[in-house]
Image 1 (cartoon, rainbow, N blue to C red):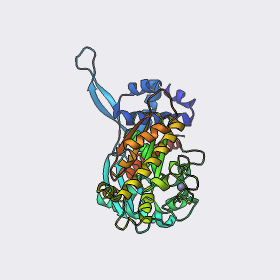
Image 2: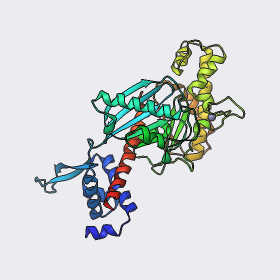
Image 3: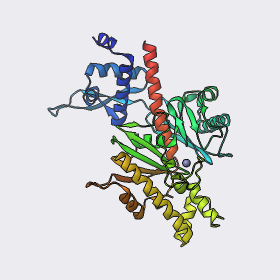
Image 4: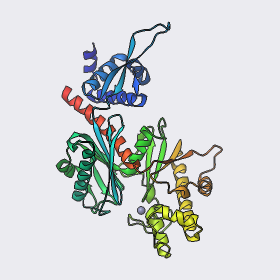
Length: 405
Ligand SMILES: [Zn+2]
């Protein structure tokens, strides 16, 4: 009966069901077939078929749960389903200006090990970038006695405009050339599928799977680092735009013919808020002899330096203006401001909140909540790993369908 039912269902539908089942198991930790069927409003027979496929692919496993009995007596133990954490190893990787950070996670998202490597050049040719990535991956795997052949997937986070669906980089501040299809280089240099994605989208994915966006349908993630990024989650899905390069919040204009941005245009938000913009502002006024990071500017401001205080305050006002524009456009459930470091308190001050409030169209309802999330150094790599797990899941489910057809 199962078989005849399955035969009238298309492969795409079966794959979609398998992925929804997998998502359900990931979000619940461990769950019975009958509970999955009721959560997904699908027949138990369909769930039985999908879970059998996922077990045979090694993605999930059965465990014995607590016995449940209405009479209070001991009943038969329930069979629950859980991800098989040991089944696949995924690498998440972020290429920043001066450093590559890598995290290895199992299929449940548990950290296996992590590694950081200094970069000699902030911008590299595509070939150089991929071989640098390979080296960093080899060093990371070696730390736990593995080789990169053990990896099931590699997710690479870059700043810039990236069409993730085809690993195509329109532009990135880490790459010397524009319009690069990374697929041939990946196939040549890396031992398993690799997925290139905009770094802010990766953080949005991590917030959705493990962070402050868990359970939310519509939210925005603003990332603060060298530049300013945005991840848009609408109806539970990342929104990337037609060419894969929407959500360029950092390059929305806040000043006509304003400060020069690293993208080559003028007046971008990032040219007032990004790390490099603040350090540049201190430099042109001769205040930056010992200044490397935004934390240095904070230290200077805290010790009473007026110039440092006004540079940070101006960045905060520009940021508030940008965030109020986001609220006017999206009216999200919440906005999560995510950063790796503790150096963006100037963007979350009471003055910035007032600026946001003043810029949002007046309605008789409270503003969306603005949450601040300090992730620590591995924020970006963890985001990449979350995306990697999702992509490996899709890949394995597709292979399952191909083998069965
Ligand atoms: Zn720009």
